Length: 77
Length: 77
DNA sequence: TCCATACTTGACATATTTGGCAAGTCAAAT
DNA sequence: ATTTGACTTGCCAAATATGTCAAGTATGGA
Image 1 (cartoon, rainbow over the protein chains, first blue to last red):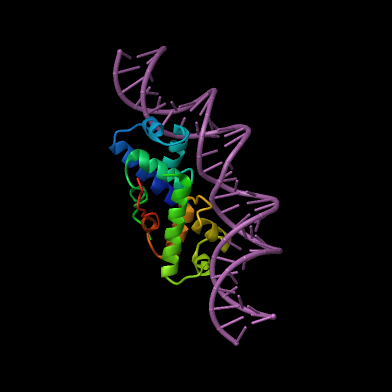
Image 2 (cartoon, chains in turn cyan, red, purple, green; image 1 turned 120 degrees about the vertical axis):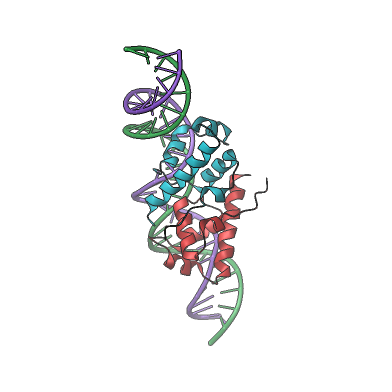
C-alpha cells in the first residue's frame, strides 16, 4: 500500500469516529493534551500529514477510543 | 500517560514481536519498504524516537502483523 | 586473545511534523 | 445579502523524524 493511501485511511477513520461522537474539530482539540489546533486535525483527517504515534495517542484519548481503533484498517493487501 | 512512556511501550512491543520471530534488526530492515537502517529501528525500539504512522506501517508489514498488534498496549490509565 | 555478530550511540543533513495565525471556502440560518 | 460556524489552505518558525555513516559496546565463539 502506498503511503498516501495509508494516510487517507487513517484520516478517514479518525474523522468517522469524531463525527460519530458528534464532535467538531474544535471539541477534539480542546480535549487533547498539550497544544494543538484544528489546523493539524484537518491535515491529519485529510491525509496530508503523516502523524506520529504520540499525536495519534492524544487523539485517541480525546476520542475515548483505543489507538488500535484509530488504525484498525482494512489492509487492501 | 507521558509521551516517553508511550514510546517505550511501543518500542518494547516491536522488539518483542521481532524477537519472537527470531529476526535481527537487519532482517527487519531488509524486509522493509524504502530506505531505512538499523539505526532507526534501534531508536524506535528503545523509545528514543516518536515514529510516524507510515513507519509503523512498514514495520508491521515486515513483521507480518497488523499495525494494531504493534500498538496494542495496556493503557496504564 | 581475536573476531564476528548484534545492537547502540553520536553527529550530520534533509525532510516533514507540529504548532500557530490569517485568510479562504462553503453551507446553513437569519 | 450578511453573518455564523465548521473546516481548509497557505505560510511561517521550531522541533524532531528520517536516513546515513562512523565509532563504540557487549556477547559469544574460534
